[in-house]
Image (cartoon, rainbow, N blue to C red):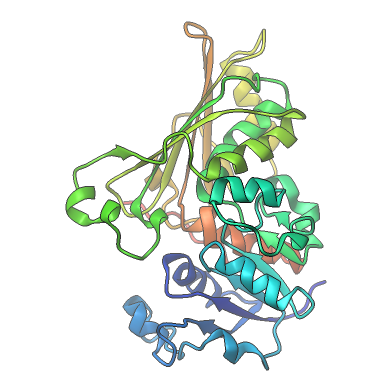
Length: 347
């Protein structure tokens, strides 16, 4: 399927992910952005909520109910978890294709979802149809999907670094430790005690120890790659920056594995990938800021018998909106880089 242009709506555009989708889709040559929704700010210009869009995107925000009579090819659900699955339950997938940016369709079962999210899944009949939207692993399935579950930001950074090593039997699936640091935009646009400026500025803290909701997502996908179940330790941290994720992962190497072989595995896996760059030295978050790139690095320490990987993404782009646009491009048979050619902003 390769239409000249498609009609797209963004549901929930007052948050950071929604505004980033608007930033990427407004100049996209194949997209007509016909509606942007907000239940709380309906009737106001989008640029009143996000002043950086003055003169660029001034359309009035509408409610979800206003979409009923619109002819749409795809909806982006930039909604909180629980709200997304309620929307899919109520509207189904017959009308148009959906890319969901919440966590509601990333896990394989309703039981797993309830265990980690603490609430029943109300649209479990759609879980089997949802495709995990990581293009580097699921490109073929994404192309034909009606419902794409856009991956979480932390899982994207961790999976892209570790999947090639597990797939090529370079590291053991046992004893993997993932240490991630994120900018505060990962917590969303709504202010909270943990993201209050005086608390974040000049500070650095861990959170979600032993129970972060991205843990089962990482375990499940890496388990599929490895061909066996994986139990790993994932610890996220909050950096005093606005955007970006740096993930360092530690794994046991298989016999005979060294720095050269793990680097070669990454190069082999990502030689033809437009948005994954294998780096000769550990990357930093400013190397990818504002772009859809994931930069990865790997080495092996013979002294401690550990493989160490470092990966960086912009949590709002490759970790959310950019990856969603990449999935849109795959679903409509366009080059994956369409609308995503922005270089990183550094400094």
